[in-house]
Length: 337
Ligand code: NAD
Ligand code: UD1
Image (cartoon, rainbow, N blue to C red; front, side, top):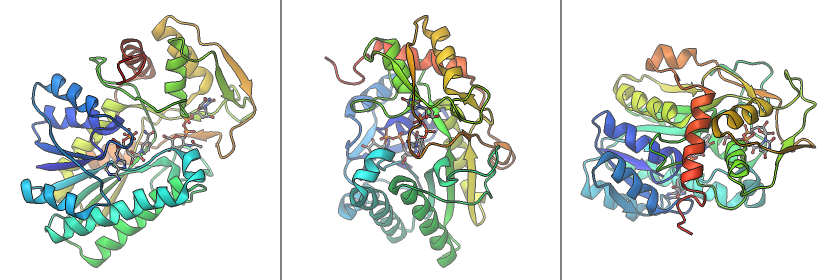
């Protein structure tokens, strides 16, 4: 049985489906701080099976212990965490507590129960402002905000854990920019309030919830001056987790892998692709750069192919079509108003 922390969230809910499709049994542990149980109802509908769920906080060791008492947990996919960069600058203590202290509690409970296999959700944010692209796993690491630092520190903690006890099997997955949604249109990304990230903002603009998109700067050193990112379909990303968990027994040392497509698209490329997928115009205005943003970020995905036998196959058109289907069917996300 696989324990999926944060399994009700955007990436976790999609991963639950791919775990099921690959024949793996799992239990979700989530405190619903940034999700709703409705996502899991929808997952249950998609896979035709009830979801095993324990509601709780990863900082609560007793609640985590309950999961190990009730299920035979062999490995953990650890998604649970707070993820908004701007918010992390406003609330650093909450971010360090939730992400770092939460992970410490999780690892302690795992150790106590002799469960030593973990796949961790890291982020391309740990590369800071890369000196060149595409980005390889051995590039220098840095972070400028508490969210990014929490990912860096957790990576360090997991590396130290391995040094202390080589029985641990640890996979650090560094995601690039997850977008898209399940084909059913039943589950997708449901940000609270005004979206910080590009794709949900574009989708909400297309559906008429936002007047226009602000394009944060058109004076970057990129093909059209707007920021370039490696957008990856959430289903491809989820499948990367399935590969990681299937590979984990043969992992030696700490395995660190980029999950990206290797292709970079600009903000205006994405606007265009979304207009094509939705048939809607996306009004936009060029505004000043967002502080902390970098010009270009995309992965070298060749190591993932070599060690996990995984590569992304879904293109930007499919990402936009699937995001649009989710958005148009659920203009208010999981809230039914
Ligand atoms: P999400 O917010 O949709 O999902 C996270 C889930 O964790 C939510 O269901 C939330 O309720 C739960 N959670 C948060 N704190 C918890 C706690 N203390 N105890 C129990 N549950 C808790 O986010 P997501 O986009 O699905 O991201 C999943 C993971 O991937 C996060 O760790 C995030 O930092 C990382 N990541 C995300 C992105 C991205 O762009 N979405 C990029 C890189 C890395
Ligand atoms: C953001 C986070 C990063 C995190 C990643 C994935 C910041 C500074 N960084 O990165 O830590 O790992 O999400 O979740 O928040 N853009 C606009 N208008 C918008 C929104 C975005 O022009 O309204 C542009 C940005 O300038 C960027 C691109 O779109 O060039 C993508 O932005 P976003 O989706 O926020 O992702 P990242 O900046 O890559």
